[in-house]
Image (cartoon, rainbow over all chains, first blue to last red; front, side, top):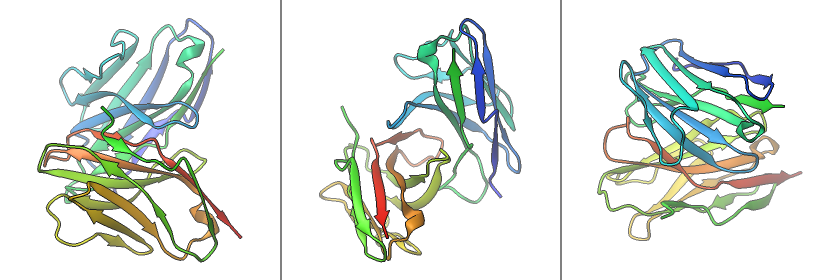
Length: 118
Length: 116
């Protein structure tokens, strides 16, 4: 149990276009979704936290108009990188909370998306 | 201010030996949780072990154990009998508060290389 499916695993897009990344909780209801960004050889930096049905809470320094997060259902959250630029190239990974019966290790991570903007 | 500190950017260990990865944290919240994750080159985050701030005993999960020293605010990961497959990045993370909906903050990570 406790699987989060993240797609796509890799994406290459042209500068100026938008890219959507999906995270689906397959066997539980993800009440909270966290979105992280990781540059090569660096740590995971939290971008935003989203709760189902409400607006996402962005961390300081993260442009909410550039990184659009939608958490419209308990099993799906999306991150859209709008007007992507080469500096947006990074590894994006989601983490869902909500798996029943696991109050402490209840953060289930997706497999990540490697975004390259050319 | 840095809340999670991992001072070892890289570590080497001989296969079958034990290794300790350091982690110190900073929080004023009496209720918190400490996590260790393994990230292989594929990028996935693999949960290893958890320690709650009120847990009386150090956590253990198979070959992984957590050396929790609350007064020193340290939560070092000990891997016993290292295997070649243990080569990966290891991240220490902290959740402040009792609710697991609280966000996880990660340390900078330690790259472990297991030598045959």
